[in-house]
Length: 157
Ligand code: FES
Image (tube, rainbow, N blue to C red; front, side, top):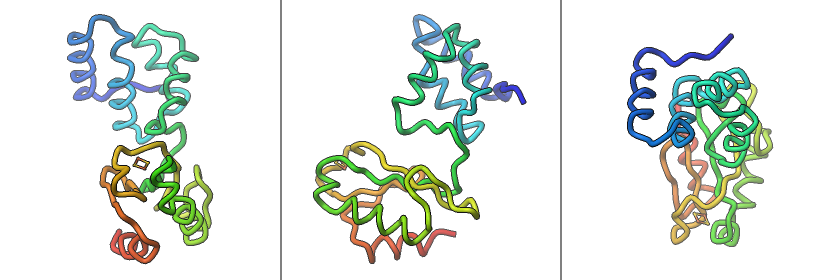
């Protein structure tokens, strides 16, 4: 199935094109817009978006694969993003990942069979002073311990 922006998002895309000096400069906001609509960036979406931006799909894919906030596979309802950079790593991020591996029987990059949780490791979330940090969808959870993580996850419906 080919990708097209919904009318509302097409309007937002056109507004972005008007704001930036050239189409290529719209790459990141356009990727966010497409992912917001589709939930992830499929191959078809990347090809169609590359056409809209007048760039080569491989160049767009390079950008997608560079940033951990872009996803090329469907995600679970809750995206568990564990920071793995130095401060979080020293504060127990690896144990947090191991705990989530065991709890949901998924490795980083995988989604639970019921589609509720996707686990990913990400680079610094910019909250190093409150390590270790877990981002669930758009929300940050900081100064985590394993019991605290279990309490947080237990409240998700
Ligand atoms: S190192 Fe984890 S938030 Fe910066």
